Length: 113
Image (cartoon, rainbow, N blue to C red; front, side, top):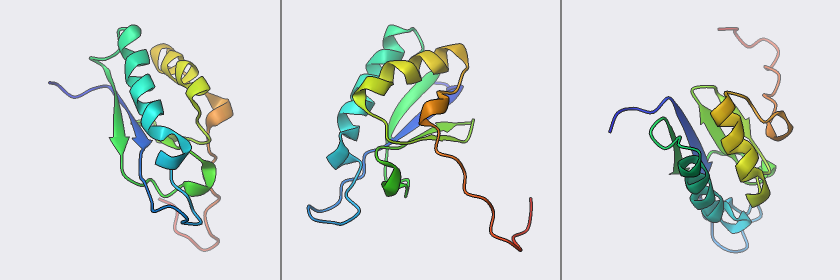
């Protein structure tokens, strides 16, 4: 299978019950990745876009998170109701702005790349 044009990495990390951070799996991400794969297939995108289960993305504070590559976009607080908007956005080459987790400002004194 050739490389895809875009990848959607869905955090499906699961922590032990009672962990104060919780985990994306406990917040429904396993069902989200399944539905996202189906939505991409329905739109004829399965050969160019791949939805993948991922380990921890380290954004527990923003709910279920998805990283869209190569765009370097992070979606947060994703729910099942957002799956169609994400799949439609990928199909159109658009970002679902309402789900974007803004990048933090660089720390003062940090080198700019």
